[in-house]
Image (tube, rainbow, N blue to C red; front, side):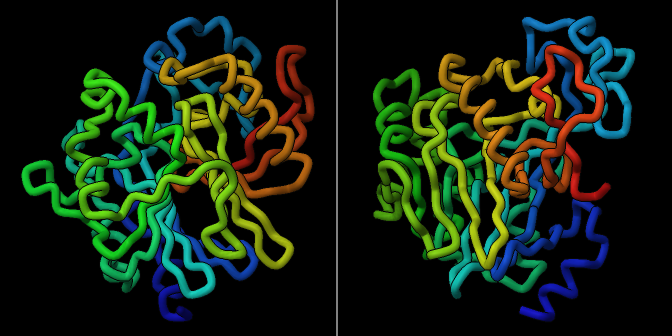
Length: 304
């Protein structure tokens, strides 16, 4: 493990190199599959640039450029954890469903840190949107399981929802990405909080999807939370009342996000977000001069 640590520090902020971190005794790597620039309207269609007046990030910079794009790209990433002798992958990216010319690479990058894909013990799926399940299989033609010795874990509510109608199955690519895992006997549906090791557990965080779950890391006095798609952009730390267009039920996602922001800030947890700009890790701190509409909290990326 020491050699893996050294290798992972080289080019730590280069998305071609897994970003190493530690939470207590848990070792982790953030791994980016892809990234892209997105517009305000593509994520928050009910907002305009005027809603961002006076709203700035930790560096005092506007979140938007003059073209209405978010300055920081949207990341598509996963998190590899090593806890109590178990290799745990949280979300596996776009995979075969890539929508741009940028190469996908979660499996390749896992192997660059010396881990064979057959060594992965668990794949924790925060939810079934295809940018989180794309590497469940290694190709849409073969449907061969990419992590053949892993137990894939999702909330039962997530499984039941996306399998309930042909339309939902089609929109989630269920037959290509989830059904092969079921056919292989590798999908475990859980209900509520479920421990993977004594340091890692999944926790229901319904809102973005019916069975969306977050992952809690708690080890040796330190803690972190992988929030999946409970947040898409750092601005949602300041404005947790802003719902993404992709949220299934805003009556759940908005209060959940507000609770998460307050909890993370008050307990000094590390925030790990699937779509925040790579490496997508940071802290939540008190905002010095918040706008009246702000939560009073602000995101501080770990690279600051």
